[in-house]
Length: 223
Image (cartoon, rainbow, N blue to C red):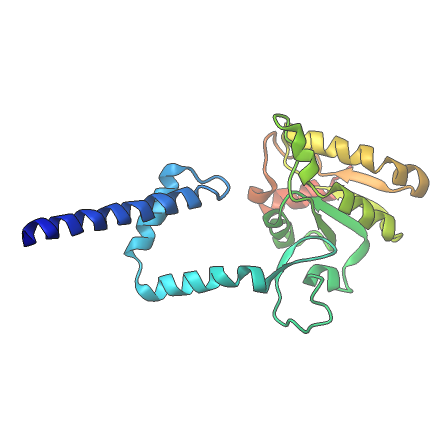
């Protein structure tokens, strides 16, 4: 009898553990570019970690919503160190008075911004679109921050150039054309200049992975 109970409990434990593994695998697949195999490898890697690591990871994840803020101006995310700070609504790039105010570089995502910044070739302001136009899903256009970009340019008369730094693929091309269409009124009325990275970027290139020398050349030779 005890043996049967032991087997039953053991089986129940395995079922619960498998449920945890499968659920975590599903959750990890929510991350960009993560497939089922990679997701499961993450889960098995976590199983091997000690309790201290798991507690630290859990704590940091729980702090994301309260401590990480999205800039009201450019939509880059940053750590809100002081909840009472007068500048808490803006990131360090938007607060930096030494950066050129007249130029805004438009990027798809935050990690693209960070790669541009590492190149050291750019000293203007930024704007994170939060996505690009999908050729397979036209409704995606509603999710990118085109209205916010329009409002930013409209409100800041100092802005005289938009540098479009999007991936060199069909979706990036479609998004560039859409931005030009939306900003046409500013081009005509204010002489707003809309430039793009030089064609030195190979087809399909992603800003996130481009080396700093290529970024520098593409920016300096923008048209």
